[in-house]
Length: 211
Image (cartoon, rainbow, N blue to C red; front, top):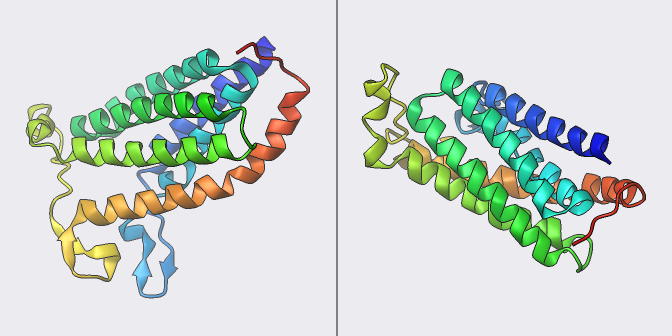
């Protein structure tokens, strides 16, 4: 069981590391008149997998072990953010990841005895919403506005105007980024149900949890 738990931690660390790197690369796919690269990065598609890992760890090993996996992912996110992101974005992304993942653990645990799809579906939905709200709230918070220049980094302001989802009326850029980010999380929440069900069944015969 220890080896499988360590594998879960390794998977969380790997997906967080990959997402922190891939967030630097636009998802340059043309969808009709919209260039998705204007509102999404490759990291937007990999990051929601962290919720799948959290849910599977919770299912197999219980909420306490799931929180350990979350903290391991958080530590990696903080370390990478120091090098890859501005202070403002590092604070926003680290806070959003930690609080959203811990909420996911709690909601999943409350729903774990219901239909197989309810716990991963609803825990991922509410935690994804919280993740998006916290990230963009902190990224746009005036209290953090001077951090980037204070530490000699380029201002990471997301407030300059841009067409909504690259085609609509002009709005602050963060509005399009937040909307696009949450849409991807919603889509991935549904798509992740298939691997969750498969891996849940595989794990069921290989681990026992006292909850």
